[in-house]
Image 1 (cartoon, one colour):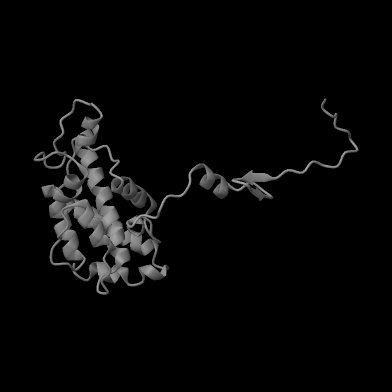
Image 2 (image 1 turned 180 degrees about the horizontal axis):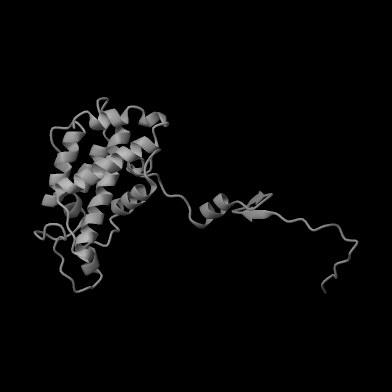
Amino acid sequence: SVRIPQLSDPDDEYYWCVNDLELDKFSTKHTWEFLRPRGPVQDWTATVWFKGSVPRHAFHFWVTQLDRLPTRTRLASWGLPIDQSCCLCGNALENRDHLFLRCEVSQHLWSMITRRLGYRTFTFHTWTAFIAWLGSNRPSHSTTLRGIVAQATIYILWYERNNRLHNSISSSPAALFKLLDRLIKDTILARRNMKSFNGLLRRWLAFS
């Protein structure tokens, strides 16, 4: 039989228990880590999530790093009967590496960007090489500046791809660079009080 509670009984006590750990109050962190255990930290983590990154650019870059963007080849792999040619150039299959690194539009844009960053040319034509370039540590080049520029570039190229596909509106690489230039300046100015952004605007304009 079940004992009927009485008004004279002491107050009930309760504990949150997550993975055999008793807590005085509910913990979202412990609950989340129990439901979805942490995996090993990836080598590319610092190129995606770093202090001062633009949240929407970082999230988009993360999805791109995981190769989860709905490129035409990926959509076709799901069984959709679509044209798989690149929306930017139309000369090759549209996958991640081609769209962002090998397409003539992307290459033209990257050439302008790397010159602005002080590099003679860009040497990354695969995503693996691109991530290695982002993670390289050179005293003469700012890792933070390289990171915010790279993430903004990937974001802008995807925006341009969608604009051409859905709105039939296209912009030249020069116009895209102008948009990127304004975006980088605004990003740096908005974070000018952060230590890692000291002098970044001067670096960005040094080779203009």
